[in-house]
Image 1 (cartoon, rainbow, N blue to C red):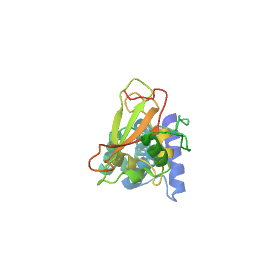
Image 2 (cartoon, rainbow, N blue to C red):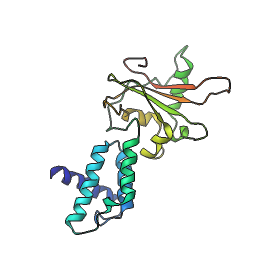
Image 3 (tube, rainbow, N blue to C red):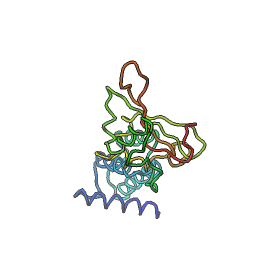
Image 4 (tube, rainbow, N blue to C red):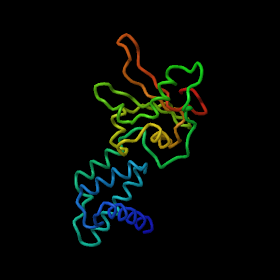
Length: 205
């Protein structure tokens, strides 16, 4: 009961900020709230609990349950597919220095420059980039198309703002090493690598 009350309080605050009421609401508003919570880094389980609370509130008031709509079901399925997932905000990690160091490798230089750029800049289908991330646990490195990550975060965020929220979707451990693998700078070269964050292990598993 306490979890439901807390979830409804959060939804009500969000609705009021949008100039709307918490009930009744159309399914599209629930989808917007799902996307908002995902962008804030809430886990899929927390988001599903919030949706359940919204539905329970409507049913208790004998109102049509917007959470049963197909668009809401698809929204919940979408957040469950995103890999790696965004988690609740984490303490700042061991990020690369803002200033260049003498003799730094090319991937490090590119990564340092990319940290100030928007994530959406790397979501062009014509030039696909992959997020490569390894958690601090025992799991191996994971890959995720950047285009799959963009719909789950607020518009305009940079990599410097997103990397603190990344964690392994299998074990939940915070990200230790984060990189980007993209199209070659020249046709005769392999993938372009950018190192966004290097942690305690400093090497991929």
